Image (cartoon, rainbow over all chains, first blue to last red; front, side):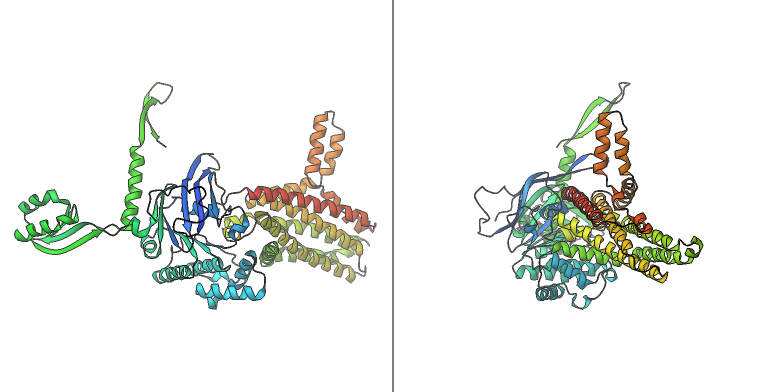
Length: 359
Length: 254
């Protein structure tokens, strides 16, 4: 599948089969959500024209800065929010239909549970809510989710006694209680220590190996990069890009950074047309070349003029650099879209600059 | 099954709420305290015990509703536990009904404990077991059910404090809603009469459930009266819960 800047709307008649015959689990089409302020009644688009597909068996990472629309998208998937425009289906059903959540597990951001119940009581409640009725089945599902979330010995502990990291694992245990085919995790790795994060990442990979679909949001880019099959980048309610990781970030060398000492002024002047950025710290000068092909030429000149090469580092595009480029690029774009007009400010005919943002 | 699971969890939460025990202890002290006061009542001690005991069931039951039921739904939204519950295959109306039934269970426990204590106090006063007290206690419970449904309705769209205030207002107004009909018959304007009648049918008529004075004075409470009041209470509660479910199903949970 090709990476696109915004995934195209589904073809009519395509059904639930994708181009490579993978089953579509979540499908959003022109999905939009407006929030209205309680007192000001001001409307704000939290999500705009979202076209997205999540396929069976993949780990889909949803990246975006705070307030980008990640949680809103997840809540629309779960029927916790109702869409203002467009549509969304989960397993082919509208999220307002409770049956669409039968095979879904959800871990909310910073999860909060009933303080006075024990972990066992809470998981039994969750099992009943997902429709698991037989006692044997409840105990079996509980044992499996406790094992996957590494909480086997905590069944009788009251939830109020759990630390933040353990509550995150409780959230995972309740999300897995119904053996879901789709697991939605909202910022599952935030607030965890490095070991906790590693364990959580391993669990997500384990879920994928078991054939489940994982849709998770994060702003911790290395985590997304290390475990996701496909990534979507959302900013200010708009899906900036979506695609497989190696297509979004092809891994080709974009430039080369050379660190040298004993660099003479004249040599630097000669090399300036080939260099994008020069930084000097003490005796060491760092040269970022405009492209990788220039490396041989520049290195030859440096050696010839007596400079001492300390390191040569190829610079590749990373998910982080792509993310930063898209987010900052969009911000710059919206800033340049600001239009200033002169209008009468008050009754005394003074003029002022009024800034209007183009939509 | 899902409704039962939510009800059971709500009941468990209520039982682990310390304020419930404070209310029960206060009411028991009040009922048992009538034993001390009865010698001062010039032979009417039994009546005073029954009167205070039955009023305590109504008053402390209502306090329990204001303390616990008024925040029943909003607390779940505030603590974000609602995300966990509604992300399961639970319909919104199932959540509302489950919450109501859980609170109704907790009220059964409160009313039974208080009625049991009242009957023990009466037995200790050599008044014997009183069936009329049981009948009055039952109708007080139905009244509490109506108030619980109203608390759940307000809790489904407003904050805990506001729903507590609104519920209390309905409790006070509900005891005088019969007067609205009398007032309507004396109004000259036909429009004002219609408005008053509309208000009478919208507001709960809580006096229907008040047979406490009959129980105190030993007047028989007919089965028809009990059945009619029970049917009214249950139908009113169902109507209010339907409204609560409709409002709740349109809510966004940010």
